[in-house]
Image (cartoon, rainbow, N blue to C red; front, top):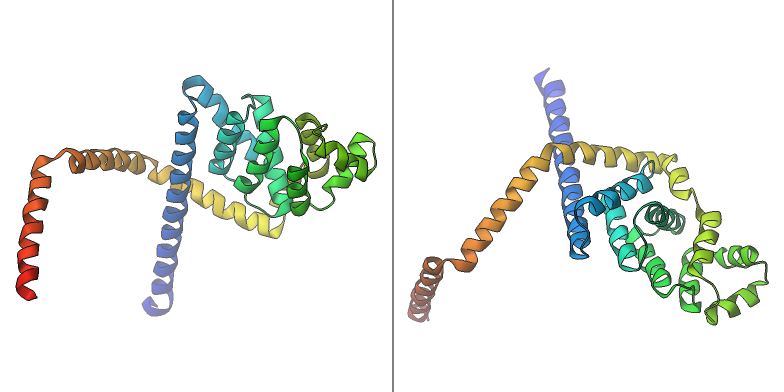
Length: 246
């Protein structure tokens, strides 16, 4: 009984525990990095709460993570998107487009941010989108009510606004992320995501405490004259020993 039942059960429990910890730690690190980017942009206090809420709502019901959404939010804010409904819509569209293109949210966000930053869809960005989402050009032309060739000319001349681009993307890819979440692969990813959420809750306190202790240790490494003197003495001893061996 011990050999055939207890041992495999313990092995399975150990594997699950490791998975919970690994996924939870990955989520914590991702969120820590994303929040650091937002704070670097001066997003703090109440504004940070609003941005994080926008990010959470944008990826709810999809396979994308909060860390993904927060990273997209940082780039979007830098490109001029306002927090609130505009930011939530923007993150959601980036997630939908990324799902449709089978690409990471960060990669798709770079294209969106280039368009948002200039305020218009140019020929280069149109080609980047079309490469990842075949058929987008036809959808863009239909939205504008012109032929595809005319739409490309308008893009090359900078006559397609970012608002037109986002409206077209909403009609073309809107809801893709939520639809994918209902597939076999999507459900599997959501299972892992929710295991990670459990791990995140378990490890959050330890993560924050360990980060503080790492900061204190770094201070010691930087400022301890005693440690630097010991390293210098040890280096001299090592040099003498090396010369002796030679």
